[in-house]
Length: 139
Image 1 (cartoon, one colour):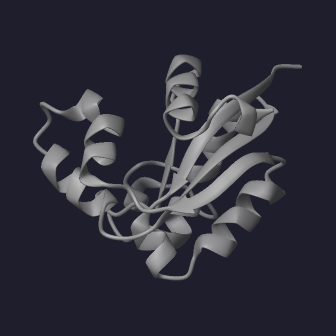
Image 2 (cartoon, helix red, strand yellow):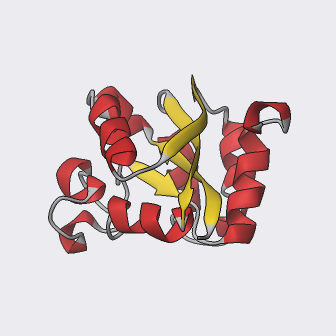
């Protein structure tokens, strides 16, 4: 067994549309334990820092603007093979390419407004978890 933790954000579009509860239910139904969770509103500085890896990409400014438009829900999740499983449950970044029943197929409006973020690797998960949660919150 490979019990691991991952990080996820329910993005502003999904929160505003009232889909947060259904997304949380889908995550729990997929066998995830919610270790830590809170609703917050990202400042421009926080969004810039979190997405710094994309700073040179053409979509960076729009992503920062989108992620600061309303509340988000940040989560620390745990289960066996959490990173790969969450990415499977989320579906493809572009909801048009996402498998039926995935979170993005059900709730995302577009590739830009795709309702959920999940870590893509163990190192990224550690970094993203540390960005939003203290060690004490993750016990």
